Amino acid sequence: MRLALFQPDIPQNLGAAVRLAACLGVPLDVIEPCGFPLSDRAVARAAMDYAARADVVRHAGWGDFRAASQGRLVLFTTRAAQPFQDFDFRPGDVLLFGRESAGVPDEVHAAADARLFIPLVAGARSLNVVTAAAMALSEALRQTGGFPTPAAAE
Image 1 (cartoon, rainbow, N blue to C red):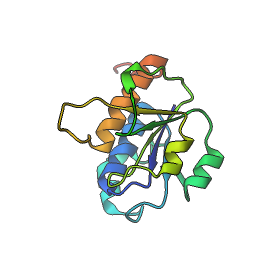
Image 2: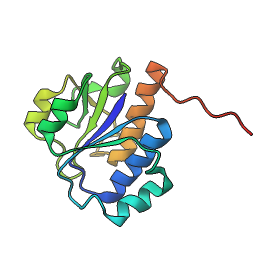
Image 3: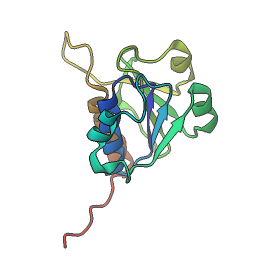
Image 4: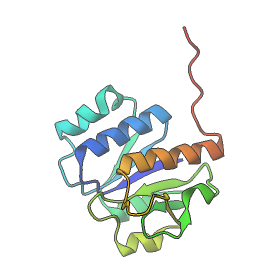
């Protein structure tokens, strides 16, 4: 299981995604270009001390990501027809989330093996990208038995 962010716009969201990935033991792919310098202090502040624990792979662009990516590409998008909770996740899936400002281009939609949405109440447009990623990743890990085993209390 992997988490992937397509050209993130907001450094705090990337930092929160780094922390999420580190805490759940899931690699994070960052597909550049980002809307900010990756050295941005806001990324480090949001990731806190979890950045050293995270397995983050940077890709110079969509083509580089596609060349390196293995497993099914599962895109989360408001343009999908299937709710995420009805999907059968597999351990090798790559859960892809688009830019906060624009989602992903048609080329990325076309490359996805599955397109899923998170059901929201009428009138709500979308969730924060990391909130959506946490929901999706939780369901995928639950289905595949991929949650980390907690360390024994000392």
